[in-house]
Length: 182
Image (cartoon, rainbow, N blue to C red; front, side, top):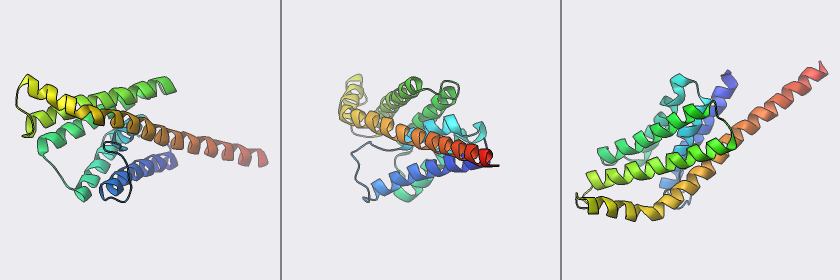
């Protein structure tokens, strides 16, 4: 990846993490579970060099958590693990970078997040009995948030991928114009 493309990709990731911080600080109003984090993990998997594909998005998440505050370690690990899965999906999307696979990968990432984090809340929080009925209750309680997760992930994935691809297109057009003038 060329250096300007890498800088742009990292800037978009840091900006997305900043949105999460601003939302949690009450400076941006977004519905619950509408956040750019899964989108930035997916985006990082697609556009960052392999050695940075997980490190940069998870570091941005960690930085946001430092500013916002940490929470129960088991739940936090499930959140980070879910986003790592989105990064893996992003690695797969490198060779399948079309609208259909990106939409499918985004929804799969949202589903993994829902299943893993609600199971973690059941397992590590004192909200639900540690029974199958308790686990089902955790999933049922999470359903209203799942819709927001999917919609937010789709919106932020579209914004990140769209902004990056638009910037690349404009840069190529600019190079073509400069090349034609010389």
